[in-house]
Image (cartoon, rainbow, N blue to C red; front, side):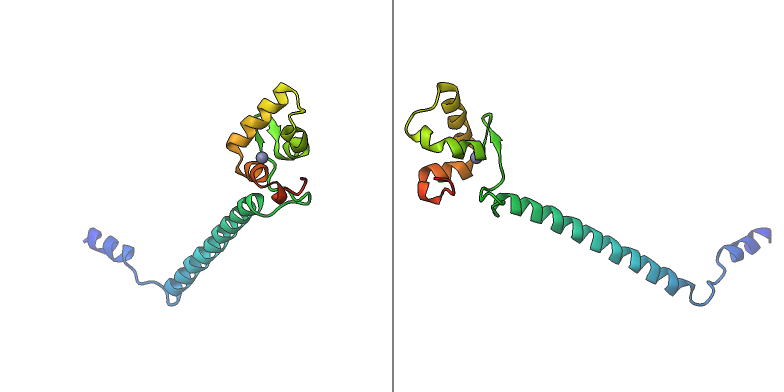
Length: 117
Ligand SMILES: [Zn+2]
């Protein structure tokens, strides 16, 4: 008999409105989480895209440090690089940078596209 009364206690009916209150609170939390996730995804995505595509104030896309030289530095030295006026170590750094940096490579291939050429 004791067991059956315990069973009834455990399965007592919910007070009116409790379930819908719980449900709407869960929905609110889900909505808030979705908004936060969407915000984070949008922020990270925009940051990545802007770094790759949108030039910064200097007109140079994200300054990469490939081969021990920055994009901005490389482009400053590009005229001397073309005329072979640079020392060997700088030339090697530029060669290494150009192997891995598509932005600078495109400027070397199409000099008219360079903001500094
Ligand atoms: Zn570069």
